[in-house]
Amino acid sequence: MNHLPLIIKREYLTKVRNKSFIIMTFLSPLIMVGLFMLIFYLTQLNNNKERTISILDETGTISQIFTQEVDEEATTTYNILPKGISLEDAKKQVQETEEYGLLYIPKMTSTEEISKQIKFFSEDSPSLKFISRLERQLSKELTDVALINNGVQLEMVENSKMDVAIVQESFTGERTSKLINYSKLGFGLAAGYLLFMFIIIYGNMIMRSVIEEKTNRIIEVIISSVKPIQLLMGKIIGTSLAGVTQFLMWVILGGIMVVVFSVVFGVDLVGMQAAQQQEALQQGMDMNFQMQAAEVFQSLPLGNLVVAFFIFFIGGYLLYSSLYAAIGAAVDNETDTQQFMMPIMMPLILAVYVGGFTVLEDPHGTVATVFSYIPFTSPVVMLMRIPFGVPIWQQLISVVILYISFTGTVWFASKIYRVGILMYGKKPSYKEIFKWLKY
Image (tube, rainbow, N blue to C red):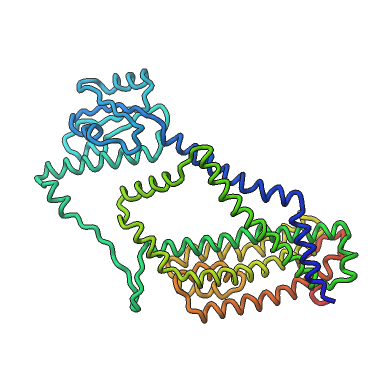
């Protein structure tokens, strides 16, 4: 008789009815959203910090940029000190009034010497963002002064500037760009990391479940009427379904909590996104952001991505979870699992880093292609390659290799599982586990 559906049902209900599972299902999104909102709130407090900066400008001309330009954050006030005051007196004045800092611009014979002697004095180390903004403003002003001193008309320079944006297009007419390529890699990385985290979280859950049943001697009763491979597959599938249920709950609850936190604490996520886009535009990014975003989605093989994601996600998870179950059967407690975890985790970690460092550089190169066929790395690397356009025949070969390897891994794991679940009181070695495969 096939007991697999009963085992799947039992494993699923046991997991979802567990108090810790229920608590973490509701508590995890609350913690994650709360941390995100806290970080955002603290960041806003830091950005909204009001500062008063005194400027001692011995040249008498460069400091005018701080009176003509409106501060982009509207939180910094510039106080131009009168000419004739010494640097030491300026320092004492700033310390007595407890201002944020003192910007000192010395008088030199050339703008090049001035650029090397500008100093900023403060009680505490200023933020990198603040200093970078000052450097950007001063650099532009000193450059303009140097051009004027050399007899160059600034209007001619501004009118002569050319922004080059190379249009990338394949021989078949498909357009692409740097933004599209980075977006494609982002989709691949997101899919790869999602699989990575899912395997770690729920693979460990399968392993702990096997160890718990083995320790409680429940397994001795179950194994008398169920084949080891059915029990193994039931645990994997049942725990996987529980994991999918928990993940969907996290997505739903997380979305609700983001809206609630935004309303309660007055966090304007839309405004934050608009501010980030505005800052990006000020730093010289393409003005046609929305048009490029539309091109990104049009260039992505969304149908292929969705289908491939589920196929590789399921195959990769089943492959690794069977190994986790075998480890659980081979040991008596979670401490003993450490010696077996590294060989399993290394291919997964390697897949993430190989995909991240090689796919963007050359998604169809030898390294990326080879690793997209190796079953222990293909679920991650192939998902990173697909947005860049992988032929269907390559995807099919990778899928066939993955699922054949999963079948072999289940056979391998069931051999260990059959012997290991009835072994107690001894920490097995790799040599002993290899002997179990012959039984």
